[in-house]
Image (tube, rainbow, N blue to C red; front, side):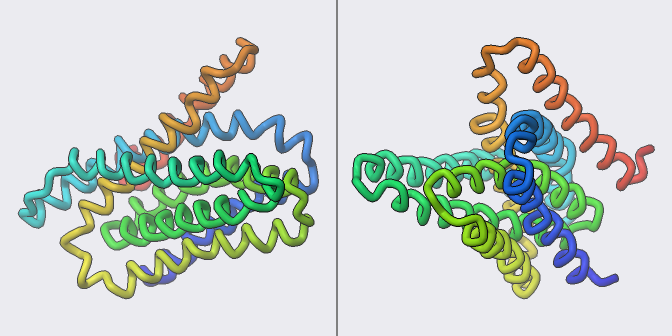
Amino acid sequence: MGILAYIIIFTLIGSVVSLIGGILLLVKQKFALSISHYLSSFAAGALLSAAFFDLLPEATGYMEEGGLDINLPLWILLGILIFFLLERFIHHHHDHTSVLKEEKKSIIPLVVIGDTLHNFTDGMAIAATFLISIPLGIVTSLAVAAHEIPQEIGDFGLMLNKGLERKKVLLINLFSALSALAGAILIYLYQGSIEKFLPIILALTSGFFIYIALANLIPEIHNRDNQKVAFWETIMLLLGVVVVYLVISVLEGRV
């Protein structure tokens, strides 16, 4: 199977298949909401593990092999800041529109735009990692899917709460998820032009993953009043770290 086939299949796994979280909310709302925070905790561990055990070592190795001189910490920081600014843009407009009479609908386009950009960058990251190695691409795809499933539960829930019909919610999120495929194909088509920038893309992706885990997912654990729930969320976070590390080790032949 060629690289393009791998990119398409695993981008779909990392984006469209993650819609299972939202579909689960439509079918089993109480169950989906009850497990979403555990899934978020697992995703946080998976993202951190992918960033520190896979993406950054691969970026360093690629630089050494190609004799490239790139300041990886700078690009990791830029990845964190870019994602922060994107979220601030969305939250800023949400805060300003919340006082309007049409608030029920006004936030939805912003959520869709933010989610579409997010998915587009996920697709770019998946394709870029496959261009370096198939194992790296698989791990990145799984990490993306891990955090997209609970996110889709949240997105579906928000749109349903704002009064959108279930069919429309599903179609909007499907369109948004397919933007990942567009990002992936774009990277594949221009791989010759971006080859020397692949370590930068990996560093930016690491920054995205670290920010999502530390700023979005882990704070949910700290906000739990129920210590028993917080304990099991912590276990799920550690499980996410271990599972992704073991997947990386198996794919790279360490075990």
